[in-house]
Length: 222
Image (spheres, rainbow, N blue to C red):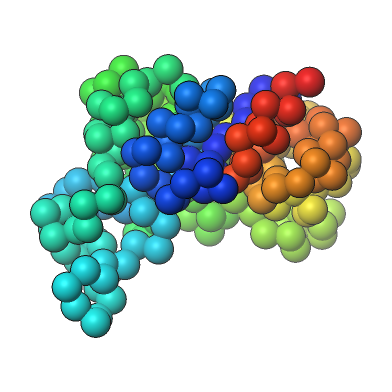
């Protein structure tokens, strides 16, 4: 297995999408991290899953509508992550909201890290211009299990230059993985939280996984 990402930084070991948790995962041997990114109203790429600002108000306002300075202190920018943890790891980012792949990849380009950046969107959207970063798409179960839909979708993704097809680990079948590989793309699996899920991914020749547990990521190498 080529890639094993600590999901939201390895949230089984600390507060998700925070610098201490990212750093802890890397210190424990993780070679890849996963996070979620939003772009604030003033153009900062910040790392948070829900994308809602709650501090100081009972109302939940979208991060995309407020400035970076208004956010809670534990929410880092992508630049903060690179500045604190360096760039010697693969980083997968789930683009949230309307998405701005160009803004995200620009931060990575500035740090010389774009070649190890993986940007994911749902199958209904695309990240836009992302420079040297890698483009991935997360698909639904019906898009993999319906053979006709799958073949049509995979060919269209190949034509668009998508490099990775991502799906929940239970959604994958050997036939689907084989078709992805035959078209020159990679197959990633998310929500790999137990050994049984990891072993199934290995049997299917999945190329990369996402897990909250760093110890499972270590096992993926054997």
